[in-house]
Length: 367
Image 1: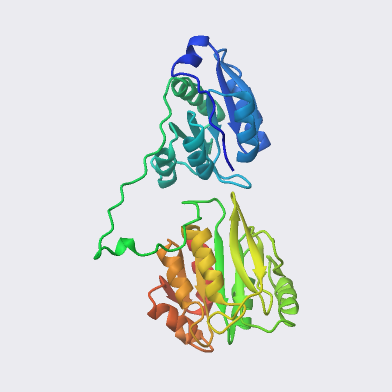
Image 2: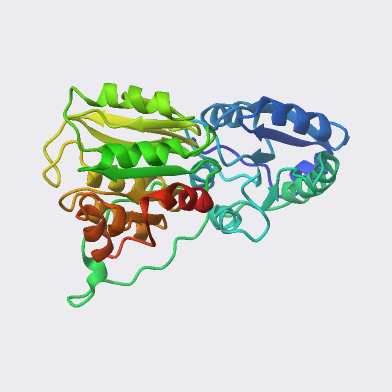
């Protein structure tokens, strides 16, 4: 995605002409309509267009040449923070972030400001009305129209030396957002895991966060296993197919003989199902799933590792913890085989160790 540089209005130019051209980028049609109606009440502001995602927003920016942009964070295809960074690099404009995730002083708000936003606002909630928002937003748009957008400055990097470990190759780029509305739960298990999974999923409500599961099981059994769990659970449980969305109320079981990885497109999480070599002696591998969750969900994830032989999942769970996820391991007292949880604990990737009956309640308390 690229934005060709274009001639920018000079600071104060919009105000001098008396009309501030505003583009609204938000995936909610209701929000776009409300913001457009509220902003239109001010004679100094003209809403020149709206867009449902950053890709459509890019085209509208080039076409309509707005003076100020209001931008949501959670959107399809690309999240607002990523788009903001690209915009500030190629086509800097005053941007006001308007999102339910950006409570004043929160970490995501700080990230948006560091990326180049001139202001951050929270969408209306129980104590914050549309009227309050519109009054404040109009004032901030007028101020933003006079602001000179600045490209974010990259943090300084130390020069490498023969003794400097920072010169070593970096790990995979973090592709997760600092915070998302919907969380992801990643579960790994093996020997004894079929009954452990049944116990956990049956205890979760229909609106539980989206769940991705690797259970070591032969190819011909995973579909019928998922169908059985679907009958016993309030959630929808299905054998994962490539491209399936990870959404609240759904649990996806990795198909036998295929790896399953978490991916992200904008605010949407989905799974990739693919073949490949054995990893940690398994396909599907818990390590493969957990490492992808660390990279794409980060602190928006909760990991669970339960009964099973071997150490599949230990390395991936440590990567999840390092990325900010909170992890649960099944206690030895209820494990059929205390192998995988033991290895994950030894690797330093576990935050909570609880017996099987307490896993579902603990999981819900964390998300």
